[in-house]
Image (cartoon, rainbow, N blue to C red; front, side):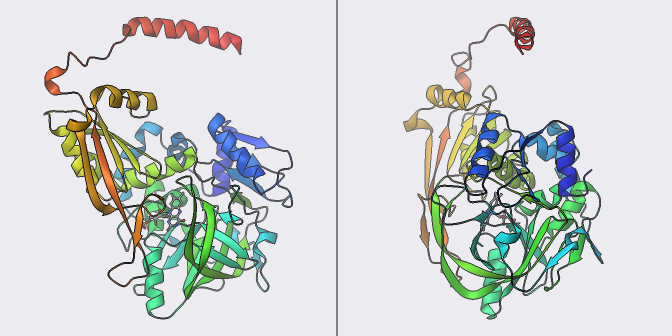
Length: 462
Ligand SMILES: Cc1cc2nc3c(=O)[nH]c(=O)nc-3n(C[C@H](O)[C@H](O)[C@H](O)COP(=O)(O)O)c2cc1C
């Protein structure tokens, strides 16, 4: 197992999964463009060791561009990922607090200039400035002192000032509580966490759970933390970078446009944070995460499905598998029908289970939900709009879906409430007409033989 972020990258490099780009490329647009191309062409991890202006900092992108790498991060085979997660997840292992750690190899205080220290990327044409997109923001509940963390988009506004999108719990709730007390919220922004801790940071867990203890459970050893220099917070001892600071109470400024995970430029009135200390390892590695790529699909699918597997898959009768796309806005469910109402029953259960699944498509077992053409085919041939469609209004929506409406919360909290309608499409075949809907195929033994012949042709051509 890997003890840190760089150990994971070294391992992937030895396995031939890393593509190293040696050309001098700019952090504004060029490196993001290269990450996007590498991610769509072959899915390699992209390593840049000659970023313009940052010759001593390697930049790594598309780290989790393939689901197989999530499994590798936890030291298991891809097919065993879900089972390993469920069997280990609840055996929490508390983090241990160390006196020192590699993240303290360099401690920068005084006048902070973030962009002189970190190669923060500007990703899309109309982004207002450089954004951290893989930043795990750590904070404590101002009432209970329990730690929480999550990825949040962070704009570098000024040399030591950030704009930060604290829209999802637990940090949105922490800020709310701090503001009610008229206090700033202490935050540590961590880049380059060991993979298990990074993955644990994005899962949707019940309030009050320390995600470092989940990370410990997943890799069966405790995550080592160190105290921050200037805050009452703890961060991974082996992280690549940590920025220490405070979110200012009741201050909001327009933050954006930023090209979001849904593929649109979005601007919000968001809080401001001031940074007063940066610590980092020697020869640090910067973790880049390109928005709106298949890496985000992999991460959101993991974030929703691992923790909520029992609600989303195991407890829904007949459910075989579930695929989430576009931040979970589109959900494709594969079911084994036992009676004709099963397709609609699954749609209704999924609509109520708390994920932002605006479009739900239910298909049979003979449809490969990871193959888009197969899904289109099921919709084209098994779905009748006047019979198989369910629409529900006034459901909780996802704020970064630009088609939703946002309202002030009735509780007086500063967090806006997002409303959406949901649609369910039952593209399963009627049970009584199995024969009519039998899928055409070539005899499997012929397919196997021809496949083997073609493989040898293809390998000769290399
Ligand atoms: C790639 C990615 C980007 C995210 N960006 C943001 C963001 O900018 N703002 C935000 O409030 N939440 C964002 N989230 C969601 C949170 O990081 C986190 O997943 C959520 O807080 C789940 O934690 P919880 O179960 O403790 O509520 C993002 C998640 C992912 C996977």
